Length: 145
Image (cartoon, rainbow, N blue to C red; front, side):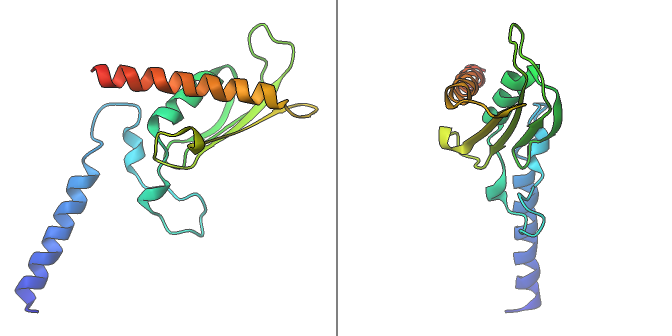
């Protein structure tokens, strides 16, 4: 292969990388998702690790009554502190991991805790259902635009 063809091939690859990185260039709250994130510092950074933006935003909306300690849209991790929902008597803490870019309920992993230990399976399921319902609303609204 000649130097010229190598240069041409490298230019095409660089152009494709730039074009793909510009795909998320809207003013949406998910524009930071264009940066690659790794679930573990020892893992290489890959595009397969990006979280689904609809699930991520819906989880933030539903868990908005809890104080957010950390949230990373690239890895899809949300960690909250203890907080009491309006009208509730029990404080909850949540950890959410969205481990796939695919819009699928199996991509959502929720751990919900009370001060006495894990929350009941029924409560956890109700919060998951609320997140998935909000995800559906966000997806329909985005399709209507």
